[in-house]
Amino acid sequence: MKQLDRYIIREMAVPMLIGTLSFLMMFQANMLIALFKEYPMDRVPPRAILQLILLKSPYFLQMTLPIGMAIASSLAVARLVRESELTAMRAAGMAIRRVLRPVAMIGLVIAALNFVVVEYVQPPSEVRSRKLFEEVLLLSSMGAPQANVTLKVRDYSVNVRAVAPDGKDRLILSDVLLFQRRQDDEVVIVTAKSGWYREGTWRFIQPRMNVVRGNTLINARAIGDILIEEKISISEYLSNQPRQDEKSLRELWAFVQEGRRTQRDTKVVEIAFHNRIAIPITCLVFAITGPMTALWFARSGPFLGVFMSLVMVLMYYNGFVIFNEILGRNGWIPPILAAWAPNLLFLAAGLWALRRAE
Image 1 (cartoon, one colour):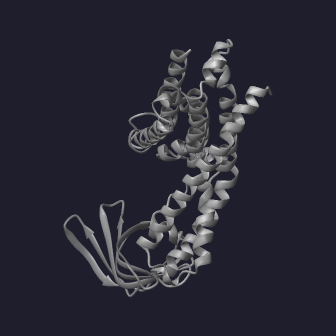
Image 2: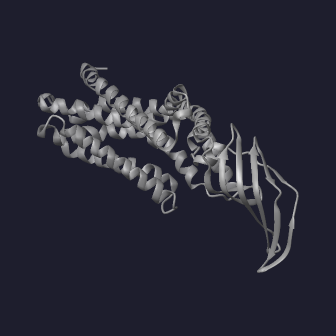
Image 3: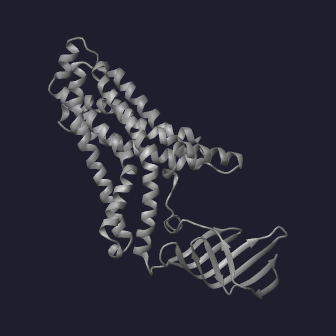
């Protein structure tokens, strides 16, 4: 490594650290605010809240590392431009791409670090945070029922007017409707005033069954209590929390392969699979595009280039949401394109800007 490389890497080190940690703390603070805004947290120990935020930090880190990379690269290059060091380097016959080589190297290292975080640290951390969130949710929501909840339990579609947690892995159900379609065009409608869920077992108490064929009621009678063995994750059930982030790259691909074999819709999981690689590569993309904003705007003000790099990050994440959540999830573009399109577009823009700067 030459002296120029070490010099630029030193220029990037502190902004990289400060930028990453600052935005990480911002995400953590937003999560803390959301918890206290959505749930009564007076029953939850402060230690549990702190553990939950720390366990979610690897998930936040995958987004803050690219932001830190964008800030560090733009700040380092902006200082070189403002103090005419880049001009001196070019006068000595050095190409801009040579000056930016250590920036790209750092971007590649941070991208590899980001991949290690999302592949090896994030999945077990998400599993633990989900379990802890389940306990926090139950403690905070104790006695506060969820209204008009619908779910699938074995062959039944179940609608419950009110669901209230009753300790860990337990739910109390009120005013339950169970629907089941049979092959002979019959519809079974079961009503129960109450029921409960305990550690994988559903029980609907003193139900009444009605069997309808077309518009004709062919059977109506009271039946014995219904017991169904169907284990659920209460946190997922009550909060609808996604779980792709708990799986490794290999597990995601296995799920996609199994879904294709059974002809299930796997678009969301395929997007998550490709994002597992595409998101870390964002660090390398910002290592190229960040310096370009610094080159264009550094002489207009000491922090304008950095501000524009943050605007670029905001544009990237807006594009990321559009491609992933709208175009990809609705099947308007292939999942691989939904995941990689923002990187490809910004990388192309950065390379074009670099060529113009040369």
